[in-house]
Every structure is written in C-alpha cells, then in structure tokens.
Length: 317
Image 1 (cartoon, rainbow, N blue to C red):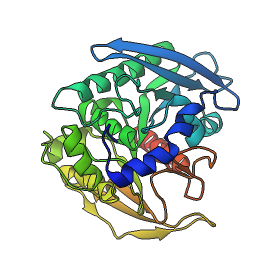
Image 2 (image 1 turned 60 degrees about the vertical axis):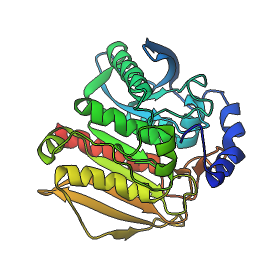
Image 3 (image 1 turned 135 degrees about the horizontal axis):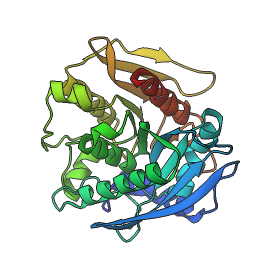
C-alpha cells in the first residue's frame, strides 16, 4: 500500500511484484484497447480505455473505473480482473488509470499522502481521465462506478468522498477506508488495522444525500492489509449515513471460497455491503490464476462489482 512495508507485507509483495509488472501485452479478447494520458499539477498519468465492440452511433454506455493495486499496471489489472469480458457481455466501457513509477516506485497510488497534498493531486488526475473519457467517448455520465484493489481501493474511496456526485457506486477490494491515514507512517499502521483520526467532514444527512453505495470485498487471511479494514470501511459509510447492520448471511457458490455478506441499511436502502471471503489472501477474488495478486478460487469479484454497480444504475434511473 505504501513505499514502506511491514516485514510480512514486504515479503508478500516481493513474491509477486516482478511478474505483475513484466506483462504489458494488451488483454485478449474483442474490443478496442485505447491509450490516453492526462496532465495536471501532480504530473502526467497514462490510462487505458476498453471499448466493447459494436458501439452504435448515438449509443451511451456506462463506465467502470478500475484502479489497480501496488505492483500492477493497467494491462495486468485488466488481465487479472477480466473485467473487459464482462464489459463485452454487459456493454459498458472500462477505464484503467495507471500510476507512474516516478510517483511511487511500487506503482501504488499515494492515497494516504494527504499531508503534502500528493493524494489530492493524484485524485484530481484520475478525475481528469474520467472527464476526458466522458467527453471523447460514448459515456453516460449518469452511470459511472469506480472499483479498486488495495491502494487502488483506498484511492477510489478518497476520490468518491471528494467527488460523490460523479459516481453511482464504489467497490473497495482489500483496501483501507478513508479518513484513516495522512502520511506513509500512518498508512503502515492502517495496513495492520490501526485506525487513524483523520476527520471526514460529513454528517448523516450529507452522506446519505450524496455518497454512493459501497461494496467492500476483503479476504479473511489477508497478510498485507488487515481484514479489519474491510469492516472499518463499511462502518465508515454506515455510521456517516446512520445505517444499521443486518444479520450476516453465509453464501457459497460451487467449490469457490465461502463468504459472509453483511448489508448496512438506512430506511430500507442499502448504504454499504461487506463481503468477507474465507481463505482469500491479498488478491482479486476470482481473478485469473496466471496473474499476480489474483486468486481464481474465490467468488468472482468482477461479477459482483458489476452487478452491484448495475443495481445502483437501475435505482437511479
């Protein structure tokens, strides 16, 4: 999650860091894999946009923004999550912003560095990428969702709390909740599940009116980011909106890892959902087994993320 790492976290990252960044070939399958870049006060960031085949003239499609984790780039994250395959079937575009290695040697988004303002600068660049794609491609601006893994999940949360009106859903996979860290040192504590005291300027009324619903996915044997963070992220959303937790329900599909699902509701509406996956470490659940930070034995996080986003799009229609 940061340039520094705990002993256990560093070992877990080092085992998979090199193969994760070595593969830069475009992900397989039909559709266009388009390059782009944005510039701002925080520098330059590249991105890739996946556009499914057969987009008709005048058609407007939903947009899913995907923020990779440490040791990944746009190509490897697309290959790991296989979100593009779902985009072809369900007809939506996928934006993959990419962190610059000069900004973070491990390819992590600097979500935690709010003291220097670097986190906000990177968030602004990602929003510029979203704006550019919405302007130049057939995007329905009323149907935009964002998802991320690890540092990407934490950056997604930061982005949503700063621009809640731009997103209809957020998915945090193995991330750390907003308002937890403000520097590299505090981020290390957060990785272990120690909560910081960074205030979030929200009240139940403002959060309920503006923040999009949250889906949290976290493995219960994650050695890099404590599973406590998954529960904490859902609680941040729930407490800000005055929502209450329902009874956890067990779910298992075939031979995949079992999971426990807890919904947090306010006046009958789901503010947040927490999916705790038994046996999952620090990896995208249900991802391609050939990729780093990817566990094919887990329930399909990409399918869950899209189903969650699509539900919010229908509710807002």
